[in-house]
Length: 214
Image (spheres, rainbow, N blue to C red):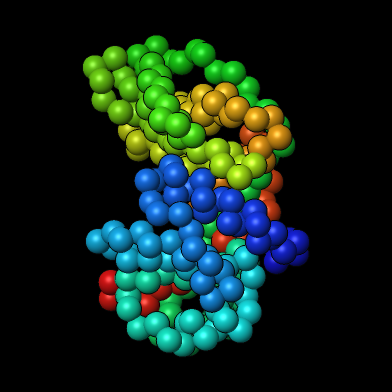
């Protein structure tokens, strides 16, 4: 995936803005040639996200010693590794993906499942539950700055391979208010395989680094 075109920095900013809405986090702030999101979580104090590797990423990596700070790059692991001191550990890779296809309506579920949909402003949440109320799959989406961002699409292990992840994506997709809003998500290696079957394509590798010990 190293031959992907560089990602537009404004797309990265818009994606982070929508992601912050979906997760009730502060909006991204420009910092060191990228964007900082103050997540303030027990396992992550903040993250810095970069559209490309450059000298400011290198300088930032040199200055950080806190294991609760994450660095993220829209680029391959090799570029991140080359920019950072050896104390930084490169994590398993993921992918920034996009899709031009309109969501397909999905109203039928396997027997024993139903969807619950809620909206709060620009944020949509979907839960697929069993007849006894146990959560089987879930996901969120938020629309901001010309982007429609899918976030935290999860199918519980006991309910996988039943089409529930696809149903969550389709249900969220119908919440997109503006047809011109580009659809964006970040996928793991396994998730990329699923999303590719739904018409999604890779914009860029998405690489994370952290100092062990957090």
